[in-house]
Length: 436
Image 1 (cartoon, rainbow, N blue to C red):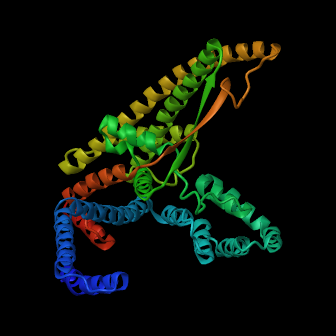
Image 2 (cartoon, rainbow, N blue to C red):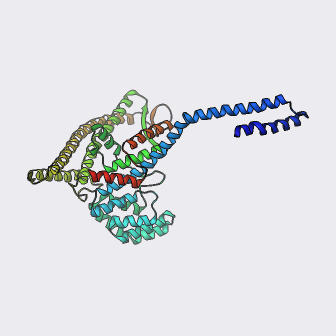
Image 3 (cartoon, one colour):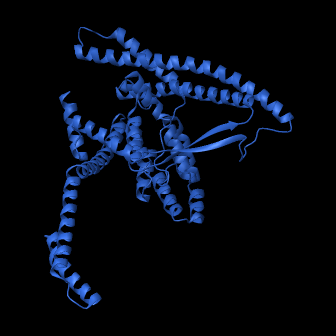
């Protein structure tokens, strides 16, 4: 109707008015018919083109938009579930502290939220109220008042920090950072990452063993996917050297050795932390024994004690009285724990080997720099061709990559029957757990 309205009355009035104003006479009937049919046919061609586009390309674009909205909606729900599952693995006071730490990770936390979080974290309402007051004045820039409150509550907060160190090093560190105004989460930079979570995820893929990942790693991966789909750009920095080949080769060898040592060291530590999470999740260890943030050396000692107790329990089990399923479950847990410990041991041996290589490369570099210091031309950071160069790159997803990721995730969500609302997802998970 819009095409015929434009081609009929609108074109006729415009043509007659324009022709009369320009030439002082009325247009001929042939000219009027020509312009009317020209407008109608142009409109029909446009209509056909639009129908074809909507039936092919337009349909695909609409489906892609739906996929992106669907995926981001479900990822946000799954992030909430992962956080709840992390908290679920703890019990009692440890669960209260973990919930408070989850709350403190939010970058848009209100003053009341700060009060609640630190009250639960420290089990002391006075500490929570003091931290809420300090945060309220700090966020609006009244530093004079903040200094007064910090001085007033200094003894209370520092004593609480010391008390928390043994029970929860992470909680102690978080309280100290917030007290001095050095909170880790900022809206500009997003939620702080769990260190080396990507390495554990890649190890889980490589070994085809999901137990290498913790629930925290699952949450981090979901957040990373959510951010990249929504246009997050993550800057990275690399170094390169252009100059004499012998200097470049020694520097390259040093960087390779350092990188390999860090990866090997991370493997051993990550596998021990994954093992501690597994022991806690399966109920063979108490969260109080192995709190987050504990040093690796202390963690190894505590894990060894737990595995020794499990080994003793195997010998003392009354296999005639226990149900077969209970025996199989304990056997599976113990076997997985031993596998983790063996992988960590292999990682530790590799770490020692890489450390020797790093020490050798470091010695070679030290000899080289000693010679450079004695010469007139040293190794410098320069803006020209020669010297050490700092290269900045960005990790991000372009439009095609976002569509491809969302297409795969949409397929996966359909395959796993993941619902679109948090309540529905929680209900389906609880139903599956009840069946198993």
